[in-house]
Image (tube, rainbow, N blue to C red):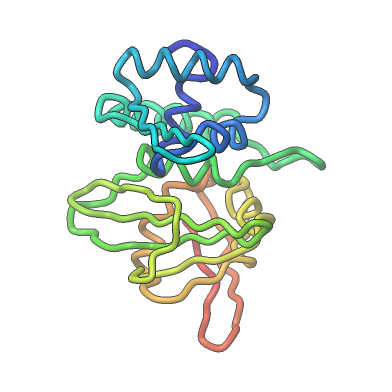
Length: 212
């Protein structure tokens, strides 16, 4: 677990299986050989499964095992420590990966057992990225795709999400539809600061999402 990349790979597979090239894309800085070696070791250690498809070109998917999924609370605790002690307003030009924060949801979010439902989070960019959080029996799961049957939806540009996640975050750029209470409940654990702006975006019945 102490390897530089192991927990990051677990985080980036939290939303479902990925191909090798997809992991390279979301893990900037890792070399092809480093990634191949680390994935092989994680498969051997029972943390990942490898599934090969009979396609041309060849396709191989990597997915977390139950053993690896049990590490998500550890990742959540590390993320919470970072929020409390290291998180700061992004500097000019600093790269903030919104998807990496979203993928921590299964480890960060612990709703009450009575909270049930789906919330779709959309980051408008190139490409548009969608994440669906599902709460059930006191746990949250994540898939990286849209949910036509979502109970609530929160949408914003990448910059809007970055501003919402910042310590002095503003939610002015985020908009939600559907069950606002459910959206707030599932999103509150993903933000860092204890206080949030209470601004609104009045667009034909679509209100700004308050994310904490």
